Length: 120
Image (cartoon, rainbow, N blue to C red; front, side, top):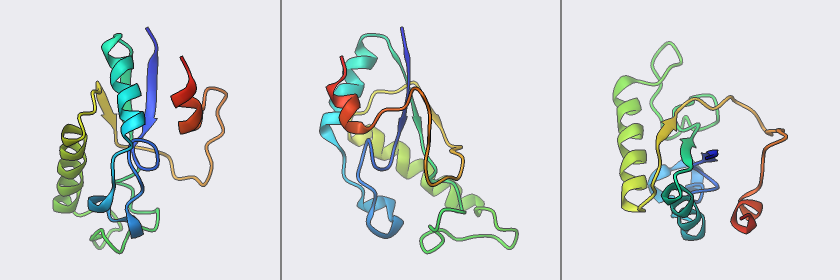
């Protein structure tokens, strides 16, 4: 079976306006595809930059003096993300909270959400 690494914001759900994750809406077509793959025993790993304080989200996140996420804020983001995945019915095996800071990801195995939906 294959392993799928699937981005949270902009793929599984919309990007919340202004980086506000509570406003994110599920992408039902993508979620249905993820769940089909999971049912066929493919490994699904969600990855997200929600815990990154360097991506212009400081308006929603409280930063400590050292430029790192406050522990309470960290826990709230983790709790919200897991709650959203559960409420939206997303089947997954793991969440990778570390996504390198970048403007673009260039990878020979990458696909857009549209390519993902049309793949077999």
